[in-house]
Image 1 (cartoon, rainbow, N blue to C red):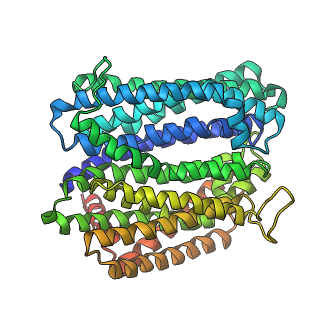
Image 2 (image 1 turned 180 degrees about the vertical axis):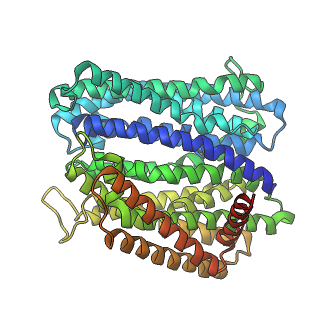
Image 3 (image 1 turned 180 degrees about the horizontal axis):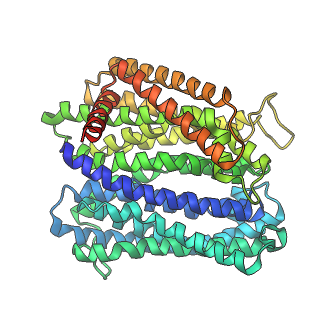
Length: 538
Protein backbone atom coordinates (compact mmCIF):
# COMPACT_ATOMS: atom_id res chain seq x y z
CA UNK A 1 0.00 0.00 0.00
CA UNK A 2 2.82 2.43 0.87
CA UNK A 3 4.39 1.98 -2.56
CA UNK A 4 1.00 2.52 -4.22
CA UNK A 5 0.41 5.70 -2.23
CA UNK A 6 3.81 7.03 -3.23
CA UNK A 7 3.18 6.27 -6.90
CA UNK A 8 -0.24 7.92 -6.87
CA UNK A 9 1.12 10.92 -4.96
CA UNK A 10 3.90 11.34 -7.53
CA UNK A 11 1.46 11.28 -10.46
CA UNK A 12 -0.89 13.74 -8.75
CA UNK A 13 2.01 15.99 -7.73
CA UNK A 14 3.39 16.21 -11.27
CA UNK A 15 -0.03 16.91 -12.78
CA UNK A 16 -0.89 19.47 -10.13
CA UNK A 17 2.52 21.13 -10.47
CA UNK A 18 1.93 21.67 -14.18
CA UNK A 19 -1.55 23.02 -13.46
CA UNK A 20 -0.27 25.38 -10.77
CA UNK A 21 2.50 26.62 -13.06
CA UNK A 22 -0.13 27.33 -15.69
CA UNK A 23 -2.31 29.05 -13.09
CA UNK A 24 0.57 31.24 -11.96
CA UNK A 25 1.39 32.19 -15.55
CA UNK A 26 -2.29 32.98 -16.13
CA UNK A 27 -2.35 35.25 -13.11
CA UNK A 28 0.82 37.03 -14.23
CA UNK A 29 -0.79 37.79 -17.58
CA UNK A 30 -3.96 39.03 -15.84
CA UNK A 31 -1.93 41.16 -13.41
CA UNK A 32 0.14 42.74 -16.17
CA UNK A 33 -2.98 43.40 -18.22
CA UNK A 34 -5.46 44.68 -15.62
CA UNK A 35 -3.55 45.25 -12.35
CA UNK A 36 -6.20 45.98 -9.73
CA UNK A 37 -8.37 47.88 -12.23
CA UNK A 38 -12.09 47.76 -12.96
CA UNK A 39 -12.15 44.77 -15.34
CA UNK A 40 -10.46 42.38 -12.95
CA UNK A 41 -12.15 43.79 -9.85
CA UNK A 42 -15.50 43.15 -11.57
CA UNK A 43 -14.37 39.67 -12.63
CA UNK A 44 -13.73 38.71 -9.01
CA UNK A 45 -17.38 39.42 -8.18
CA UNK A 46 -18.79 37.91 -11.39
CA UNK A 47 -16.70 34.76 -10.87
CA UNK A 48 -17.86 34.21 -7.27
CA UNK A 49 -20.76 31.91 -8.17
CA UNK A 50 -19.34 30.22 -11.31
CA UNK A 51 -15.97 29.86 -9.60
CA UNK A 52 -17.63 28.61 -6.43
CA UNK A 53 -19.33 25.88 -8.45
CA UNK A 54 -16.26 25.03 -10.54
CA UNK A 55 -14.00 24.68 -7.49
CA UNK A 56 -16.64 23.11 -5.26
CA UNK A 57 -18.28 20.71 -7.71
CA UNK A 58 -15.61 20.29 -10.38
CA UNK A 59 -12.44 20.34 -8.29
CA UNK A 60 -10.36 17.39 -7.13
CA UNK A 61 -11.31 16.59 -3.53
CA UNK A 62 -14.58 18.48 -4.01
CA UNK A 63 -17.87 16.86 -2.95
CA UNK A 64 -18.81 15.44 -6.39
CA UNK A 65 -15.33 14.00 -6.77
CA UNK A 66 -15.34 12.73 -3.17
CA UNK A 67 -18.78 11.13 -3.47
CA UNK A 68 -17.93 9.27 -6.67
CA UNK A 69 -14.59 8.00 -5.33
CA UNK A 70 -16.14 6.92 -2.02
CA UNK A 71 -18.99 5.03 -3.71
CA UNK A 72 -17.42 3.58 -6.86
CA UNK A 73 -14.24 2.38 -5.13
CA UNK A 74 -16.42 0.02 -3.02
CA UNK A 75 -18.76 -1.15 -5.80
CA UNK A 76 -18.35 -3.56 -8.75
CA UNK A 77 -16.86 -1.90 -11.83
CA UNK A 78 -19.79 -2.97 -14.01
CA UNK A 79 -22.08 -0.66 -11.99
CA UNK A 80 -19.90 2.42 -12.52
CA UNK A 81 -21.27 3.45 -15.91
CA UNK A 82 -24.89 3.14 -14.78
CA UNK A 83 -24.31 5.11 -11.56
CA UNK A 84 -22.39 7.86 -13.39
CA UNK A 85 -25.04 8.15 -16.14
CA UNK A 86 -27.86 8.36 -13.60
CA UNK A 87 -26.11 10.96 -11.44
CA UNK A 88 -25.05 12.95 -14.55
CA UNK A 89 -28.66 13.04 -15.76
CA UNK A 90 -30.10 14.28 -12.49
CA UNK A 91 -27.27 16.70 -11.67
CA UNK A 92 -27.06 17.96 -15.27
CA UNK A 93 -30.76 18.85 -15.31
CA UNK A 94 -30.54 20.71 -12.00
CA UNK A 95 -27.38 22.62 -12.97
CA UNK A 96 -28.77 23.53 -16.41
CA UNK A 97 -31.68 25.17 -14.61
CA UNK A 98 -29.23 26.93 -12.28
CA UNK A 99 -27.23 28.26 -15.27
CA UNK A 100 -30.44 29.78 -16.69
CA UNK A 101 -31.27 31.39 -13.35
CA UNK A 102 -27.79 32.96 -13.19
CA UNK A 103 -28.32 34.61 -16.59
CA UNK A 104 -31.71 36.02 -15.61
CA UNK A 105 -30.77 37.21 -12.11
CA UNK A 106 -27.23 38.46 -12.80
CA UNK A 107 -27.97 42.10 -11.91
CA UNK A 108 -29.54 41.54 -8.46
CA UNK A 109 -26.94 38.87 -7.66
CA UNK A 110 -24.08 41.33 -8.27
CA UNK A 111 -25.93 43.88 -6.13
CA UNK A 112 -26.10 41.31 -3.35
CA UNK A 113 -22.46 40.17 -3.64
CA UNK A 114 -20.95 43.64 -4.06
CA UNK A 115 -23.28 46.32 -2.70
CA UNK A 116 -20.50 48.90 -2.61
CA UNK A 117 -19.30 48.52 -6.22
CA UNK A 118 -19.07 51.54 -8.49
CA UNK A 119 -21.56 51.67 -11.41
CA UNK A 120 -18.80 50.86 -13.93
CA UNK A 121 -17.58 47.78 -12.05
CA UNK A 122 -21.17 46.66 -11.41
CA UNK A 123 -22.05 46.89 -15.10
CA UNK A 124 -18.99 44.88 -16.16
CA UNK A 125 -19.60 42.24 -13.50
CA UNK A 126 -23.21 41.68 -14.62
CA UNK A 127 -22.16 41.01 -18.22
CA UNK A 128 -19.34 38.71 -17.08
CA UNK A 129 -21.67 36.67 -14.84
CA UNK A 130 -24.15 36.18 -17.68
CA UNK A 131 -21.37 34.96 -19.97
CA UNK A 132 -19.94 32.58 -17.36
CA UNK A 133 -23.27 31.05 -16.28
CA UNK A 134 -22.72 27.77 -18.29
CA UNK A 135 -19.88 26.96 -15.90
CA UNK A 136 -22.54 25.85 -13.39
CA UNK A 137 -23.47 22.92 -15.65
CA UNK A 138 -19.90 22.13 -16.67
CA UNK A 139 -18.71 22.09 -13.05
CA UNK A 140 -20.98 19.20 -12.08
CA UNK A 141 -20.05 17.13 -15.14
CA UNK A 142 -16.35 17.74 -14.54
CA UNK A 143 -16.46 16.73 -10.86
CA UNK A 144 -18.49 13.56 -11.46
CA UNK A 145 -16.25 12.48 -14.31
CA UNK A 146 -13.02 13.08 -12.45
CA UNK A 147 -14.31 11.24 -9.38
CA UNK A 148 -15.19 8.25 -11.57
CA UNK A 149 -11.72 8.29 -13.13
CA UNK A 150 -10.01 8.42 -9.71
CA UNK A 151 -12.12 5.46 -8.56
CA UNK A 152 -10.55 3.47 -11.43
CA UNK A 153 -7.06 4.71 -10.45
CA UNK A 154 -6.78 7.29 -13.22
CA UNK A 155 -5.16 10.32 -11.55
CA UNK A 156 -3.19 12.09 -14.27
CA UNK A 157 -6.01 13.65 -16.31
CA UNK A 158 -7.91 15.12 -13.31
CA UNK A 159 -4.67 16.61 -11.95
CA UNK A 160 -3.52 18.23 -15.18
CA UNK A 161 -6.89 19.40 -16.54
CA UNK A 162 -6.87 22.89 -14.90
CA UNK A 163 -3.87 23.67 -17.11
CA UNK A 164 -6.22 23.80 -20.10
CA UNK A 165 -8.33 26.50 -18.45
CA UNK A 166 -5.21 28.58 -17.78
CA UNK A 167 -4.00 28.17 -21.35
CA UNK A 168 -7.39 29.36 -22.63
CA UNK A 169 -7.25 32.56 -20.55
CA UNK A 170 -3.57 33.25 -21.33
CA UNK A 171 -4.09 32.86 -25.08
CA UNK A 172 -7.23 35.01 -25.09
CA UNK A 173 -5.64 37.89 -23.18
CA UNK A 174 -2.46 37.84 -25.26
CA UNK A 175 -4.54 38.05 -28.44
CA UNK A 176 -6.64 40.80 -26.89
CA UNK A 177 -3.54 42.81 -25.94
CA UNK A 178 -2.24 42.58 -29.49
CA UNK A 179 -5.53 43.91 -30.81
CA UNK A 180 -6.01 47.02 -28.67
CA UNK A 181 -2.72 47.57 -26.75
CA UNK A 182 -1.63 49.85 -25.12
CA UNK A 183 -5.06 51.05 -23.94
CA UNK A 184 -6.26 47.75 -22.52
CA UNK A 185 -5.84 48.90 -18.91
CA UNK A 186 -7.93 52.06 -19.32
CA UNK A 187 -11.54 52.36 -18.16
CA UNK A 188 -12.69 52.87 -21.77
CA UNK A 189 -11.67 49.32 -22.67
CA UNK A 190 -12.42 47.66 -19.32
CA UNK A 191 -15.72 46.20 -20.54
CA UNK A 192 -14.05 44.64 -23.59
CA UNK A 193 -11.28 43.19 -21.46
CA UNK A 194 -13.81 41.88 -18.95
CA UNK A 195 -15.81 40.15 -21.71
CA UNK A 196 -12.68 38.57 -23.18
CA UNK A 197 -11.72 37.24 -19.74
CA UNK A 198 -15.20 35.81 -19.14
CA UNK A 199 -15.41 34.05 -22.54
CA UNK A 200 -11.95 32.53 -22.06
CA UNK A 201 -12.97 31.23 -18.62
CA UNK A 202 -16.02 29.40 -20.06
CA UNK A 203 -13.97 27.91 -22.88
CA UNK A 204 -11.37 26.70 -20.36
CA UNK A 205 -14.06 24.91 -18.32
CA UNK A 206 -15.38 23.30 -21.52
CA UNK A 207 -11.88 21.97 -22.27
CA UNK A 208 -11.65 20.48 -18.76
CA UNK A 209 -14.79 18.46 -19.47
CA UNK A 210 -13.73 17.39 -22.98
CA UNK A 211 -10.34 16.05 -21.84
CA UNK A 212 -11.90 13.43 -19.54
CA UNK A 213 -14.28 11.95 -22.13
CA UNK A 214 -11.78 9.72 -24.02
CA UNK A 215 -10.63 8.05 -20.77
CA UNK A 216 -14.20 7.58 -19.54
CA UNK A 217 -15.11 5.95 -22.85
CA UNK A 218 -11.99 3.77 -22.88
CA UNK A 219 -12.75 2.53 -19.35
CA UNK A 220 -16.37 1.89 -20.39
CA UNK A 221 -17.73 4.29 -17.79
CA UNK A 222 -19.26 6.97 -20.03
CA UNK A 223 -22.78 6.55 -21.43
CA UNK A 224 -24.24 8.97 -23.97
CA UNK A 225 -27.82 8.56 -22.72
CA UNK A 226 -30.21 9.87 -20.09
CA UNK A 227 -30.74 7.52 -17.15
CA UNK A 228 -33.50 8.40 -14.65
CA UNK A 229 -32.73 5.76 -12.04
CA UNK A 230 -33.10 7.49 -8.67
CA UNK A 231 -33.56 4.25 -6.74
CA UNK A 232 -30.34 2.42 -7.65
CA UNK A 233 -28.37 1.64 -4.43
CA UNK A 234 -25.22 3.21 -5.84
CA UNK A 235 -27.07 6.41 -6.78
CA UNK A 236 -28.67 6.54 -3.34
CA UNK A 237 -25.25 6.16 -1.73
CA UNK A 238 -23.89 9.02 -3.83
CA UNK A 239 -26.73 11.32 -2.65
CA UNK A 240 -26.09 10.29 0.96
CA UNK A 241 -22.50 11.58 0.74
CA UNK A 242 -23.05 14.35 -1.81
CA UNK A 243 -25.54 16.63 -0.05
CA UNK A 244 -23.66 17.20 3.23
CA UNK A 245 -20.29 17.04 1.46
CA UNK A 246 -21.30 19.84 -0.91
CA UNK A 247 -22.14 22.17 1.96
CA UNK A 248 -19.15 21.17 4.11
CA UNK A 249 -16.61 21.44 1.30
CA UNK A 250 -18.16 24.72 0.24
CA UNK A 251 -17.56 26.38 3.59
CA UNK A 252 -14.35 28.03 2.41
CA UNK A 253 -16.02 29.21 -0.80
CA UNK A 254 -19.06 30.49 1.06
CA UNK A 255 -16.69 32.34 3.37
CA UNK A 256 -15.08 33.87 0.26
CA UNK A 257 -18.50 35.25 -0.69
CA UNK A 258 -18.85 36.71 2.80
CA UNK A 259 -15.37 38.21 2.60
CA UNK A 260 -16.07 39.84 -0.76
CA UNK A 261 -19.35 41.25 0.54
CA UNK A 262 -17.44 43.17 3.22
CA UNK A 263 -14.51 43.86 0.85
CA UNK A 264 -16.74 45.76 -1.58
CA UNK A 265 -16.29 48.88 0.57
CA UNK A 266 -12.46 48.58 0.49
CA UNK A 267 -10.86 49.85 -2.74
CA UNK A 268 -8.95 47.12 -4.59
CA UNK A 269 -9.58 44.56 -1.85
CA UNK A 270 -11.30 42.01 -4.11
CA UNK A 271 -8.47 42.01 -6.64
CA UNK A 272 -5.88 41.94 -3.84
CA UNK A 273 -7.56 38.95 -2.20
CA UNK A 274 -7.55 37.14 -5.54
CA UNK A 275 -3.85 37.76 -6.17
CA UNK A 276 -2.87 36.77 -2.62
CA UNK A 277 -5.11 33.70 -2.74
CA UNK A 278 -3.41 32.46 -5.89
CA UNK A 279 0.02 32.66 -4.24
CA UNK A 280 -1.36 30.69 -1.28
CA UNK A 281 -3.29 28.18 -3.36
CA UNK A 282 -0.31 27.28 -5.55
CA UNK A 283 1.60 25.33 -2.85
CA UNK A 284 -1.56 24.56 -0.86
CA UNK A 285 -3.30 22.97 -3.83
CA UNK A 286 -0.19 21.02 -4.80
CA UNK A 287 0.19 19.50 -1.34
CA UNK A 288 -3.56 19.03 -0.92
CA UNK A 289 -4.02 17.10 -4.15
CA UNK A 290 -0.91 14.99 -3.65
CA UNK A 291 -1.97 14.10 -0.09
CA UNK A 292 -5.76 13.84 -0.20
CA UNK A 293 -6.15 12.06 -3.54
CA UNK A 294 -4.38 8.86 -2.36
CA UNK A 295 -5.54 9.11 1.27
CA UNK A 296 -9.29 9.24 0.57
CA UNK A 297 -9.52 5.75 -0.98
CA UNK A 298 -7.20 4.49 1.78
CA UNK A 299 -9.44 5.84 4.55
CA UNK A 300 -12.46 4.25 2.85
CA UNK A 301 -10.79 0.81 2.90
CA UNK A 302 -9.80 0.99 6.60
CA UNK A 303 -13.17 1.71 8.19
CA UNK A 304 -13.78 -1.79 9.57
CA UNK A 305 -13.18 -2.27 13.31
CA UNK A 306 -10.25 -4.66 12.81
CA UNK A 307 -8.42 -1.94 10.83
CA UNK A 308 -8.92 0.77 13.46
CA UNK A 309 -5.24 0.98 14.51
CA UNK A 310 -4.13 1.30 10.88
CA UNK A 311 -6.79 3.96 10.24
CA UNK A 312 -5.59 6.04 13.22
CA UNK A 313 -2.03 5.73 11.95
CA UNK A 314 -3.08 7.00 8.53
CA UNK A 315 -5.04 9.85 10.09
CA UNK A 316 -1.99 10.98 12.04
CA UNK A 317 0.14 10.67 8.92
CA UNK A 318 -2.22 12.88 6.95
CA UNK A 319 -2.60 15.43 9.75
CA UNK A 320 1.08 15.85 10.53
CA UNK A 321 2.24 15.97 6.92
CA UNK A 322 -0.41 18.66 6.44
CA UNK A 323 0.50 20.51 9.62
CA UNK A 324 4.25 20.42 9.03
CA UNK A 325 4.02 21.61 5.43
CA UNK A 326 1.53 24.37 6.27
CA UNK A 327 3.51 25.68 9.26
CA UNK A 328 6.67 26.19 7.26
CA UNK A 329 4.73 27.67 4.33
CA UNK A 330 3.01 30.05 6.72
CA UNK A 331 6.35 31.13 8.15
CA UNK A 332 7.67 31.85 4.66
CA UNK A 333 4.63 33.89 3.62
CA UNK A 334 4.80 35.95 6.83
CA UNK A 335 8.52 36.76 6.47
CA UNK A 336 8.85 36.88 2.66
CA UNK A 337 5.43 38.17 1.59
CA UNK A 338 6.83 41.43 0.18
CA UNK A 339 9.65 39.95 -1.94
CA UNK A 340 7.40 37.13 -3.19
CA UNK A 341 4.72 39.59 -4.31
CA UNK A 342 7.30 41.85 -5.95
CA UNK A 343 8.92 38.93 -7.77
CA UNK A 344 5.69 37.45 -9.06
CA UNK A 345 3.45 40.42 -9.79
CA UNK A 346 5.24 43.80 -9.89
CA UNK A 347 5.18 44.67 -13.56
CA UNK A 348 2.88 46.54 -15.94
CA UNK A 349 -0.19 47.87 -14.12
CA UNK A 350 0.80 46.16 -10.84
CA UNK A 351 2.50 48.98 -8.87
CA UNK A 352 3.98 49.45 -5.37
CA UNK A 353 0.58 50.15 -3.84
CA UNK A 354 -0.73 46.82 -5.13
CA UNK A 355 2.39 45.05 -3.80
CA UNK A 356 1.81 46.53 -0.34
CA UNK A 357 -1.84 45.42 -0.33
CA UNK A 358 -1.03 41.83 -1.33
CA UNK A 359 1.89 41.62 1.12
CA UNK A 360 -0.40 42.44 4.05
CA UNK A 361 -2.85 39.79 2.90
CA UNK A 362 -0.09 37.19 2.59
CA UNK A 363 0.97 37.83 6.19
CA UNK A 364 -2.61 37.26 7.32
CA UNK A 365 -2.86 34.08 5.24
CA UNK A 366 0.44 32.87 6.70
CA UNK A 367 -0.85 33.20 10.26
CA UNK A 368 -3.78 30.91 9.46
CA UNK A 369 -1.98 28.38 7.23
CA UNK A 370 -1.57 25.55 9.81
CA UNK A 371 -5.33 24.86 9.96
CA UNK A 372 -6.23 24.99 6.26
CA UNK A 373 -5.25 21.51 5.13
CA UNK A 374 -5.82 19.73 8.47
CA UNK A 375 -9.51 20.57 8.24
CA UNK A 376 -9.75 18.90 4.83
CA UNK A 377 -7.99 15.75 6.07
CA UNK A 378 -10.40 15.41 9.01
CA UNK A 379 -13.46 15.94 6.82
CA UNK A 380 -12.29 13.15 4.47
CA UNK A 381 -12.06 10.78 7.44
CA UNK A 382 -15.70 11.46 8.32
CA UNK A 383 -16.76 10.86 4.71
CA UNK A 384 -14.88 7.56 4.67
CA UNK A 385 -16.76 6.57 7.84
CA UNK A 386 -20.04 7.36 6.10
CA UNK A 387 -20.70 10.40 8.29
CA UNK A 388 -21.50 13.56 6.35
CA UNK A 389 -23.67 15.10 9.06
CA UNK A 390 -20.88 16.03 11.50
CA UNK A 391 -18.86 18.11 8.98
CA UNK A 392 -22.16 19.60 7.77
CA UNK A 393 -23.13 20.85 11.23
CA UNK A 394 -19.68 22.23 11.95
CA UNK A 395 -19.65 23.99 8.58
CA UNK A 396 -22.95 25.72 9.34
CA UNK A 397 -21.51 27.02 12.61
CA UNK A 398 -18.35 28.07 10.78
CA UNK A 399 -20.22 30.20 8.26
CA UNK A 400 -22.01 32.05 11.06
CA UNK A 401 -18.74 32.63 12.91
CA UNK A 402 -17.04 33.90 9.75
CA UNK A 403 -19.80 36.45 9.24
CA UNK A 404 -19.36 37.71 12.83
CA UNK A 405 -15.55 37.78 12.69
CA UNK A 406 -15.52 39.55 9.30
CA UNK A 407 -17.74 42.28 10.70
CA UNK A 408 -15.63 42.63 13.86
CA UNK A 409 -12.21 42.61 12.17
CA UNK A 410 -13.01 45.41 9.69
CA UNK A 411 -14.34 47.75 12.35
CA UNK A 412 -18.01 46.77 12.66
CA UNK A 413 -19.39 48.68 9.63
CA UNK A 414 -23.02 49.85 9.70
CA UNK A 415 -25.05 52.35 7.61
CA UNK A 416 -24.26 55.02 10.21
CA UNK A 417 -20.52 54.30 10.33
CA UNK A 418 -18.05 51.90 11.95
CA UNK A 419 -18.99 50.81 15.45
CA UNK A 420 -15.55 49.66 16.61
CA UNK A 421 -12.41 51.74 17.25
CA UNK A 422 -10.13 49.36 15.31
CA UNK A 423 -10.04 47.78 11.86
CA UNK A 424 -7.56 45.39 10.26
CA UNK A 425 -8.79 46.31 6.78
CA UNK A 426 -8.63 43.64 4.04
CA UNK A 427 -6.22 41.40 6.06
CA UNK A 428 -8.91 41.24 8.76
CA UNK A 429 -11.13 39.26 6.38
CA UNK A 430 -8.39 36.65 5.97
CA UNK A 431 -7.76 36.49 9.72
CA UNK A 432 -11.48 35.92 10.30
CA UNK A 433 -11.48 32.88 8.00
CA UNK A 434 -8.31 31.54 9.65
CA UNK A 435 -9.92 31.76 13.08
CA UNK A 436 -13.01 29.91 11.83
CA UNK A 437 -10.82 27.16 10.36
CA UNK A 438 -9.06 26.75 13.71
CA UNK A 439 -12.34 26.27 15.58
CA UNK A 440 -13.58 23.91 12.86
CA UNK A 441 -10.46 21.75 13.13
CA UNK A 442 -10.83 21.61 16.91
CA UNK A 443 -14.49 20.58 16.69
CA UNK A 444 -13.79 17.95 14.02
CA UNK A 445 -10.92 16.44 16.01
CA UNK A 446 -12.97 16.22 19.21
CA UNK A 447 -15.88 14.66 17.32
CA UNK A 448 -13.57 12.14 15.66
CA UNK A 449 -12.06 11.18 19.01
CA UNK A 450 -15.54 10.54 20.41
CA UNK A 451 -16.37 8.36 17.42
CA UNK A 452 -13.16 6.31 17.23
CA UNK A 453 -12.63 6.21 21.02
CA UNK A 454 -8.87 6.09 21.09
CA UNK A 455 -7.10 8.99 19.38
CA UNK A 456 -3.87 9.84 21.24
CA UNK A 457 -4.75 13.55 21.36
CA UNK A 458 -2.31 14.40 24.15
CA UNK A 459 0.63 12.97 22.20
CA UNK A 460 -0.56 14.62 19.00
CA UNK A 461 -0.97 17.99 20.74
CA UNK A 462 2.59 17.89 22.12
CA UNK A 463 4.00 16.96 18.71
CA UNK A 464 1.98 19.74 17.06
CA UNK A 465 3.36 22.25 19.58
CA UNK A 466 6.89 21.11 18.76
CA UNK A 467 6.21 21.61 15.05
CA UNK A 468 4.92 25.11 15.80
CA UNK A 469 8.08 25.92 17.78
CA UNK A 470 10.19 24.67 14.88
CA UNK A 471 8.17 26.86 12.51
CA UNK A 472 8.64 29.98 14.65
CA UNK A 473 12.41 29.44 14.84
CA UNK A 474 12.61 28.76 11.09
CA UNK A 475 10.54 31.89 10.35
CA UNK A 476 12.81 34.00 12.57
CA UNK A 477 15.84 32.67 10.69
CA UNK A 478 14.24 33.61 7.37
CA UNK A 479 13.45 37.10 8.68
CA UNK A 480 17.05 37.64 9.83
CA UNK A 481 18.44 36.23 6.60
CA UNK A 482 16.23 38.57 4.57
CA UNK A 483 16.89 41.74 6.56
CA UNK A 484 20.58 41.39 7.51
CA UNK A 485 21.76 41.00 3.95
CA UNK A 486 21.60 43.79 1.38
CA UNK A 487 20.02 42.17 -1.66
CA UNK A 488 20.09 43.63 -5.19
CA UNK A 489 16.80 45.30 -6.12
CA UNK A 490 16.45 43.72 -9.57
CA UNK A 491 14.43 40.58 -10.35
CA UNK A 492 17.44 38.27 -10.06
CA UNK A 493 18.32 39.72 -6.66
CA UNK A 494 14.75 39.36 -5.40
CA UNK A 495 14.59 35.77 -6.69
CA UNK A 496 17.87 34.98 -4.92
CA UNK A 497 16.59 36.58 -1.71
CA UNK A 498 13.41 34.49 -1.76
CA UNK A 499 15.17 31.26 -2.74
CA UNK A 500 18.04 31.40 -0.22
CA UNK A 501 15.86 32.65 2.64
CA UNK A 502 13.30 29.92 1.94
CA UNK A 503 15.89 27.14 1.69
CA UNK A 504 17.51 28.26 4.93
CA UNK A 505 14.18 28.34 6.73
CA UNK A 506 13.05 24.95 5.38
CA UNK A 507 16.36 23.32 6.33
CA UNK A 508 16.18 24.68 9.88
CA UNK A 509 12.55 23.59 10.20
CA UNK A 510 13.39 20.07 9.02
CA UNK A 511 16.36 19.71 11.36
CA UNK A 512 14.49 20.96 14.44
CA UNK A 513 11.43 18.81 13.68
CA UNK A 514 13.67 15.79 13.18
CA UNK A 515 15.44 16.54 16.47
CA UNK A 516 12.04 16.60 18.19
CA UNK A 517 11.38 13.14 16.75
CA UNK A 518 8.38 13.99 14.56
CA UNK A 519 8.36 10.84 12.42
CA UNK A 520 6.43 12.40 9.52
CA UNK A 521 9.36 14.83 9.09
CA UNK A 522 12.23 12.69 10.38
CA UNK A 523 11.85 9.61 8.17
CA UNK A 524 11.48 11.50 4.86
CA UNK A 525 14.67 13.42 5.75
CA UNK A 526 16.52 10.18 6.48
CA UNK A 527 15.29 8.76 3.17
CA UNK A 528 16.37 11.93 1.33
CA UNK A 529 19.79 11.77 2.98
CA UNK A 530 20.28 8.17 1.85
CA UNK A 531 19.29 8.98 -1.71
CA UNK A 532 21.67 11.94 -1.83
CA UNK A 533 24.54 9.85 -0.47
CA UNK A 534 23.82 7.15 -3.02
CA UNK A 535 23.73 9.73 -5.82
CA UNK A 536 27.02 11.41 -4.86
CA UNK A 537 28.80 8.10 -4.24
CA UNK A 538 28.16 6.81 -7.74
